[in-house]
Length: 182
Image 1 (cartoon, rainbow, N blue to C red):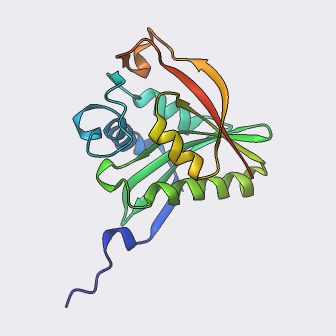
Image 2: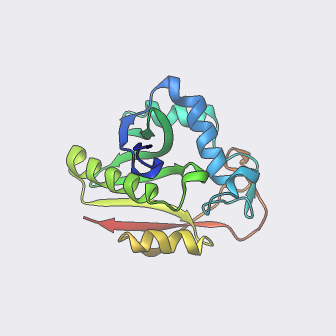
């Protein structure tokens, strides 16, 4: 009789990323947002953007930022999710959030965001978490709203012409600031 727990029941561990994690993190983020592999999950941006979501230099920048960290979630030693956390005064910024597309929809994202919120409250003493989301991502924004984030209506432009962020397939992309107060 097989008594091993189902994959979604195995314990998650969290740690800060290191230089050695860069290739795996680039693959994870790309797989969650771009190309055919991203279409397995529900967080894809492939219908809005082609090209890259990030690159090794972008991930290294997050890992080495003195005011931030890249948090990795692992299951059985395998990286299954990640997020960027940056200390910005009385708030923390939450970004570069990615969950393995094949594992989306099973509560992993909820666990990661809960750990991120716990960590920034305890480690940095902040009272808010901020993030920016492409304003057209209604389903994703609704997911964050169910977790206590609110739309602010504060928009910032998409960096058209900078292919480090992807190749837009529409001319109406912008980021909206979402905020959660603890």
